[in-house]
Image 1: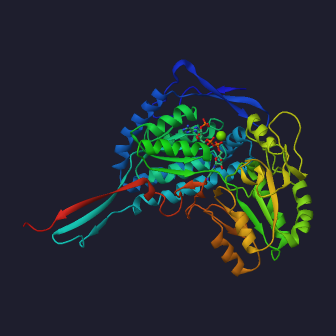
Image 2 (image 1 turned 90 degrees about the horizontal axis):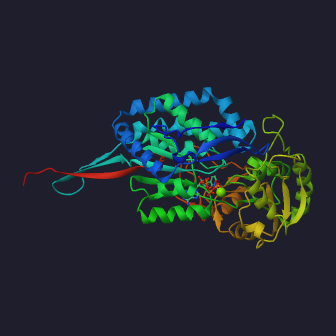
Image 3 (image 1 turned 180 degrees about the vertical axis):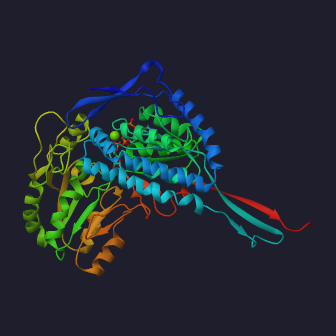
Length: 473
Ligand code: NAP
Ligand code: MG
């Protein structure tokens, strides 16, 4: 049954002018499950005005109170974990277990951020020069826009909202058109938790209207964007014109480098999850597998059964490793990458309705399209390398620089290679990519700036210096 969401979750529950709605699909059935309103540029301006009013009061609220509201929000979301995970899985297609992880990792950031209001403090310096002291204070920016992608519908909005709200800002969230339902529910729960009306607003609609208006609007003081490099460049250009700060978390083409001295069984076992999790729709997906030539054939032999054992199917089943792709159009794009590819072997996927796609392992040359471009699907490009220098050269041979992994039992090699690979995060003998307590972000075409970590809230503040004359002369 298709349900219609009649309003935006904003402080004022605005109705869409002219009744324009967008369909939200269930990717595992291919059918429409809900309709959400498409905001106009004028509606966005009204939401920003609400947010601005709410922000002034929030910034003046004492830090303990801000922290308590964030923790109440955390409690409410945790209490609703099962229903929210089912909703998220139904609009995204990831498994319900993965959906719980998506929400949980977002909540870790809310919890971490709830400690931040107390820690944002100024500095007083008596060393500013003769007759002058200086007080540097950190003030919230005002209204912050968060523009988010479809692939982690809870985690990425919460990564952005947590520290921004903790630092005393208002947040206007524009979720991806493909996955707005989780974000809308988070907006409702935030209100229920006691976040003042207008402080955390979720505005659904298109990137070219809602996203662009948020970028251009003079009362939006910062844009935090996660999405494709292509759109990120447009967002950065708009922010440059409006002279506002922006962080960009963009695409990736990360290398998984396996040396001959690695624990091969362990390295093989970790490959499917590293690139097929979330149906490969993960910015940190290790979508290039670089294997040292001396163990290349053996590695592929071991990999084939692991890929065939990867279970693609019903997201609500506990036995499923991976659900469908996000949309029919995206499946066409992913499948287009295989047209001219040398496929070594594939896993399987259900037939019939739903945007199913069987995982694929492709033998590639470094200059091939599939070795250079982000596929954002369950496809891995495998390439051999000769030695350490060759591995580093190949790993760096794309426009991107987000994540990567190094498999070796040689500590010195792990250190040398992690120095040489140009990416924002690397893991040795695992595929760990993100932890709330450490900064995250990409190099090169993978982004600009860092999110998360101990300074996350500070990134949503501006420094103001007040000079005090200390002599009467
Ligand atoms: P996308 O197409 O770039 O969209 C991201 C967001 O930008 C959506 O909300 C989109 O709205 C909006 N948007 C589109 N055009 C816009 C414009 N002109 N101005 C302002 N906003 C605009 O990305 P996606 O397909 O949802 O997500 C996949 C991409 O995200 C991949 O490239 C992936 O690597 C990247 N990603 C990066 C990270 C990271 O941390 N580095 C994490 C996750 C994903 P609509 O939905 O309405 O188009
Ligand atoms: Mg897109």
